[in-house]
Length: 316
Image (cartoon, rainbow, N blue to C red):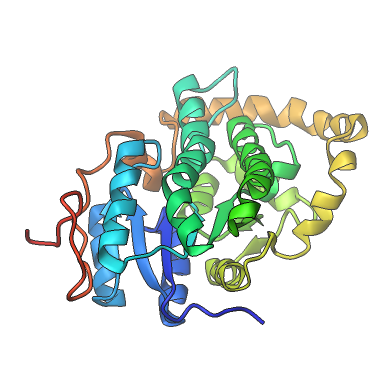
């Protein structure tokens, strides 16, 4: 049985939309007090207003260590502790290494992998104090290689290995670490990719089960919250993704290269032409993450909570 979330303080990055937003709703419904972290202040403020006054939000880019540190300080000022963290913020660029913006590829790695590393570093002292739990959101893409998603696959494979290593580093502190591996989830990120690139949509439709299946964002959020409640080591969404992980030696073998390479020789040139015609490197709903984030947080601590100089209540 899980320990439950009643009274637990949970910090979620990428909380403004998608998996993070739905995980926040479900965690709040199960009694958690939330620190919502992201780059879209209007959406964060609206989500906090929906969930109620026992939650706070912070505008922070996960590639900005100072902003993350301020968010953690604000969380501790509001609640006095931090029990669990869901390092969920992520992006996916458009294009290949030969036909794409290298800065967009770098940004993808910075958000997906470096952002997870920075989130872990910013929250580790508080999690050590509470003997808490850190869930790093990787992907089924950590176990496979998909043309047009090189930076995304690399970043998510990095998250998996980072989690494997810090699990051992933090174990003697009583902190547990898990990695989550969703396949395609019905979020803005996936819908934008399908809308932007017909070749991606066709490739996704051809993928075999389970890597070709799309999971509802609600079902994914349920798996994430279950992981936090039970302090799980691994989370697969859907569960059959675990079979892909177990077979990764075959999935990444020369035989697989031969099979996938035949299709890639036809599909990649088409993909590259579509990326050039698209004229941008990220989906429509990811544009806010390409620039400078919103100024520092305007959280609303619960009544009577302590306040710090870094995190003033709304209206201050």
